[in-house]
Image (cartoon, rainbow, N blue to C red; front, side, top):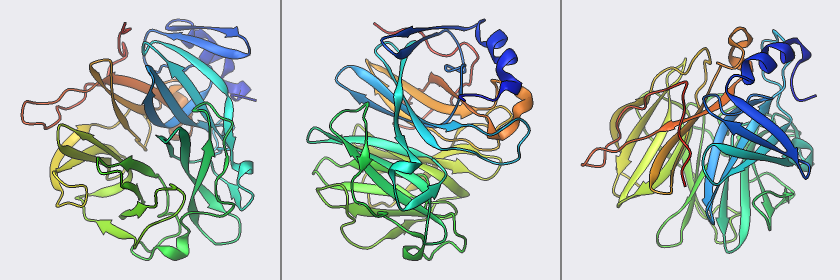
Length: 326
């Protein structure tokens, strides 16, 4: 079931005002003209990748029953677009069950391409080592299917000691630097980072930490014009803040808030991309069914703008969303 029957009438009525969808060769094609962009199911924790003229949007899938006070998430979703308005949903390319060592929770994730292969870093609940863990799946296609690349977790809770709780190993973000070195960042309460080996499935050296003001979770790292940007969820309920550096290893200089509280969602999770000459801020809020609360979230997209000195202007959250690009 893609969405609780408690909400189906509301979502159908609300969604028809701003989007239309159709089935094409087994895929769902969505034409969105406002935020949230996906209205036939709940989507959360967006990550995006630009590859060969398309945006690949990967999200978690909120499936909690009506009025449940907690997350229920079993699989991840994949959408593609060539214009930021018309989105095609592909069959779910990855499920928690694809990791035999995991038992629950398809939490935040990110996909990156290297040498023609696609690596999907995910946060799940470990089956035998108490706490959250980071896994990695691999595919020859950005739309999958993906399979466990290791057969074991990449990061487990017994490997990280800076935070004193069992859910600090969540929200992976990955970047390949200009010199070819890949880095993995993650963490709740503490921002961890480590180098990855060229095979993208093993850590290459010690796990280090980055000190950031009011850091909560959801690191996202990207590079632009020689600047590295590390954005993250700030306090709780969560805003999005960011820091800048000329070197991926720091020092990082805090620059302020990008995104304010997002609707009635206590959490916030962002992806930042450049596509066809425009910059986009992708996030989730709780606007699809306002009474559903923080456990039924929906992905939105708005424009992101940089100042001349490279700093980021505050994102203006809109119901209109973004326009089609050629």
